[in-house]
Amino acid sequence: MSKILVCANEKGGVAKTTTTVNLGIGLAKKGKRVLVIDNDPQGSLTVALGFHNPGQMEYTMTTVYNNVIDEVEFDPREAILHHKEGVDLVPANNSLNSIETALITVMGRETILSEYLGMVKDDYDYIIIDCSPNLGMLTLNALAAGDEIIIPVQPTFLAIKGLEELLRVINQIHKKINQSLEIKGILLTMVDSRTNYAKDIAEMLDEAYGSKINIFKNKIPHSVRAAESTTVGKSIYEYDPKGTVATAYEALTTEVIA
Ligand code: ADP
Ligand code: MG
Image 1 (tube, rainbow, N blue to C red):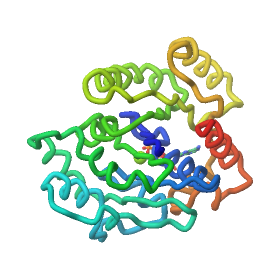
Image 2 (image 1 turned 90 degrees about the vertical axis):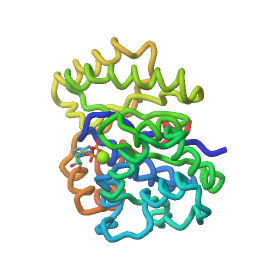
Image 3 (image 1 turned 180 degrees about the vertical axis):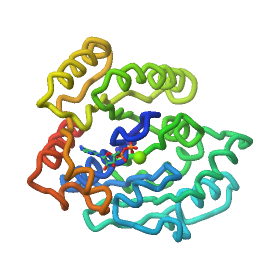
Image 4 (image 1 turned 180 degrees about the horizontal axis):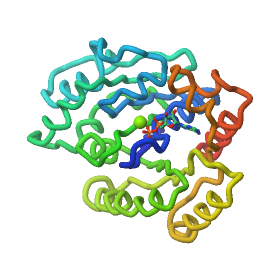
């Protein structure tokens, strides 16, 4: 049975894309069949996996959404790319912005992505959807399709406060659209564990949500090498295999499978 994970937080820059890359490849390294979906018009996941010209790609998430919306027959694998570290990818570019608006007038507009994933999910153990930093139609499609959400957050006071809105939306989706949706966990990212501040925030998060929501035991440390890796389009395992961030994502992968 395949599992659909959604990496979501309407805040940008919290390591959704970095987590999708390194959890996805982490799972592939453990022998899992993995598909990652770039559900963000910015195409950051596509670029972070080393595909540097998403704007020139013919088959992307835009074609996928359009084909399902128009109910045309198409090969669901035509947009799937293979990455050398073992994951498959459906890429995206900024043409996906057109779908965000087109969806508004479509019947069954929340379940287009879910319909697509139904065509390919038997080929995979895990599908991870990387979301854009908002709660628009594309993110709604991801949450409607997902089994479990992973919420990356940076350990700052405002970021923790900002979770309330996301949790409210997840609750609504759970009630109205997707009863099987669960929160897999909150993942602390870019943590500078040398400071007391990070520790205080982690404790605050635990007090506020720890009894209701899983908070991953493994936190992702802050590291310049991690920031560099996404810029050059490499996974942390390839760019800095012995570093703290590679070790943390590997441990997170084990925690996600358990
Ligand atoms: P999002 O997808 O939530 O917008 P990204 O994954 O693109 O976030 O990460 C935002 C920025 O932070 C990127 O420049 C990325 O390279 C950097 N980054 C991600 N993880 C780390 C980390 N562990 N330490 C330092 N920088 C990181
Ligand atoms: Mg991103």
